[in-house]
Length: 155
Image (cartoon, rainbow, N blue to C red):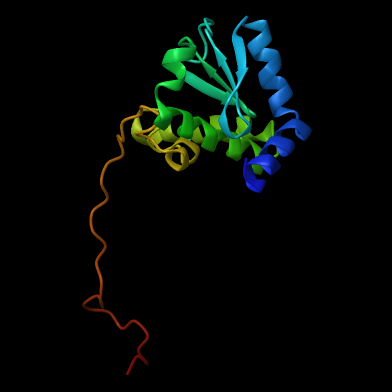
């Protein structure tokens, strides 16, 4: 592990998010194994929520799939690893509040909880299996506008 990965691992233990992830994995009766870069991989998640093939709590990446299928998608694992880093930056539990506020804002603006969600965009929408449903913005006008007396003396 790199020093940054060790720091993330320690931060997520101290902020309580990894212990919370391990508790959730245990209650859901998943199989846990040590994963790459300080992550814990939990497989066989069967609860109804959340509606995702994988999600992360602290350094624990929880998959609905079995162990072979879970590790067969390195892009998804990297996406979830980025969420693990986001937990560390947000000091644990506040990440959940920020994430759900960002998801609500995204749903309001784009119709889905991921496309406009800062956390999903930073983790990589495509790697997480999300389409980008944001509407393209019209190009910005450059240069001076015609008319008016912007910055003038009024003479």
